[in-house]
Structures are given as C-alpha cells and as structure tokens.
Amino acid sequence: MLRAAAKNHAHVAVVVDPADYATLIEALRNEGGTSLELRRRLAAKTYAHTARYDGLIADWLGAQIENARGEAFAPTLHLALRRARSLRYGENPHQASALYLEPGAAQGLAATARVIGGKELSYNNLADADAALECVKAFQRTPACVIVKHGNPCGVALDADIGAAYRAAYACDPTSAFGGIIAFNHALDGATAQAILARQFVEVVLAPEISAEARAAFVKKPNVRVLATGAWTEQATPARELKRIAGGYLVQDTDRDTLLLTDLKVVTRRVPSAEELRDLLFAWHVAMYVKSNAIVYAKGGRTLGIGAGQTSRVVSARIAALKAQEAGLDLHGAVLASDAFFPFRDGIDAAAAVGLQAVIQPGGSMRDAEVIAAADEHGMAMVFTGVRHFRH
Image 1 (cartoon, rainbow, N blue to C red):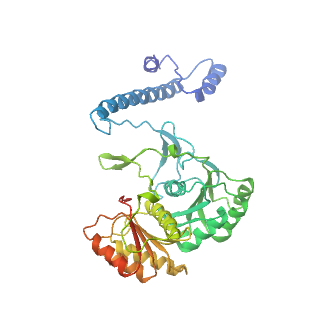
Image 2: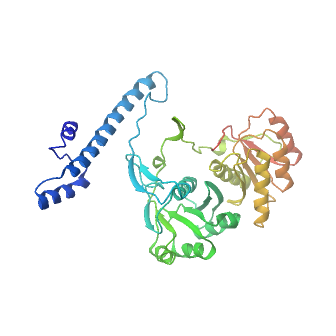
Image 3: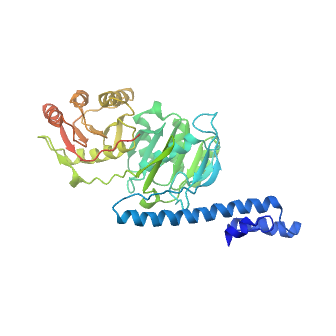
C-alpha cells in the first residue's frame, strides 16, 4: 500500500515518518492541500523506507539459508543509510563529505554523539573521535583517557580519576597531542576541562557525559567540538565492519579484545610479575587500536611510547623509544606490546637496549625460537597470545 501510494504521489501524500506529521498538518492548515514538491519528497522517503524493509528481509532470509550451509555471510548485503548531517569538509578542505547513520544506531558511539558545542564537525574529527572512543571503551571501571591524532593513539592512561588519566596520557606525547581528539570513559568534570584548555589546542573532546562546569569551561573556547556520547554497552559497537575498496566492500567481524590472563602462554625462562602482567594486558589492548606495524611501550597503566604505521616492526620499536625519550619518560622496567609476531630478533634487541623487561606478542613466526632466545639473553619475560591484531 505504501508503494502504491508513493507511485501515485501526483495525487496522494504518503507519510511514513512521524517527523513529517507537523509539515503535513501545516500544509493542510495553511494551503488547504499539499504541493507536488512536498508529495515528491514524501514519496522518495517512502520508497527509501520500503526499500530498506525489503532489503532487511532479503538479507535475513539469505543469511538463514547460507548459515545452514556453514557460510557466515549472506549472499547479498543491502545498505540503507540515513544522512544525519553534512560535514564541514572531508579529509581535505576540497572534499565534500557527510555523515550517514545505520538504522538503529545506538548511543555510545561517535556517530550518534550529541554535539554540546563547538565548530561544525569534519570528516577527520569523526573518524578520529571514533578511533579514540572505541579504544577507551574497554576500560569501563578504571577512569581512562585516550588521545588520538590521525587515527592513532598517541597517549593512553588509566588513573584514579579522569583528570589524572588525562595528564598522564598527555605527558606520553605532548607534541602529537596538539590538535588531537580526547576521549574519556567517565563523565567529564570542570577541573579536567580546565586542565585540557590550559595545556593544549584540542579539536574534539568526547565523554559519556559533560558536566555543567565542563560546558562552562568550553564556552570560552567556541572552536572546540564537545560531544556527549551517552552510556554505552558492548552491543553498541557493530558486530561487523565494512571497508570500501574500488568496486566493492570488504566485510569482516569486528576485532575485539577478549584476551584473559589464562590465555597467555609464557615462553621464556623468566615469568612476568603480577604488575608486568597488568601492564602487558593494558599495552596489548592499546596496540589493537594502533595502525600496523604497532609497538606500544607502557608502564604503570600508561603508555610511554607508541610506534605506529611503519612497514618494518623494528622501526616501530625505535620510534616508540624515540617518543619516550622526547617526552622525558624512563623506559626501564616497562613492557612492550606488538600487534603481530616478531619476524626477527632485532625488535627484541632494540627493546632491551632501552630497558624493556617484558613482551606480549601473538607468536607464530618461523623464527619464534630465535626471538625467545633473544628475550632470554636479555633476561626479559615474554608471553604469547596466539591472536594477531593487524589494523589498516
């Protein structure tokens, strides 16, 4: 019936969205009827609604058939997205862009966050906000702060309160934090907002809630985008993710950090201490959100150096050490997380040279024995996870 009415929009107004009721009532009250332009707009909305409905049914039925055959993915995938807003610009000012939302997108996401204040959001703002928020979500109970720049964490910390967590995250790499995106897992208070504004230029700040005091602080800096995400659950993050390539889409299960202490396999003579194990799991989680090849140095629930996006793992290790040195942070007694295995011992040698004491990595290299021997030579502890976390 909806499709039939939409097809006959030259003579019929069809409404599928309660948000359009007021527009329709106003037209009837003021003009005694509806214009062709309004009926066309309502018809287009109706066709989009019925197309989404049909697509969902086709995808669901196809998935049932394919799942019975042992295939995890449906034969078709229909995307029915709704434009939420036009954005300031794309990755670069000469590129136009917009944000589209999936049907039923939950709260607790960068895409659905409420804009409290600041300039119009850009493509990069939302991409980085998403990266920061997804990283900080894992630290539910302990106050946490994640600072992201160009898609990579540059400082992550846990502490007794979010103000202390912010200061520790910022201290990891103050240079990279300039113009960054800052995400918290607890409500943002006024004191922390003041600390941010006193230390750095920031593009976006997001947290589950923004206190009245924090809002008042940001009023003085109207260019800072402030986002309130609302509370989140694990289900808020989509179970699958899509990446567009020329001519198609890549679809995969969302990478999740489900690693437990009991999953770790100690492969060196020295066993990591309880404190080292806590730092290893912390660094491992952060490494998930760093572009490959990823190396994360950490100690005491904070990152000390992050090496990101290098084509050589040993170079990422050297960059992580350089970052710590530039920030004046001591790496002695720190731990290392690597998103994938070490193909050679050089990365371990580089880490040992700056004082690293424990390593977490997937394992699985043809030269695992050589890498383990290097760790033993340096008196380091090493654990294997059996899970890789490439990120491109």
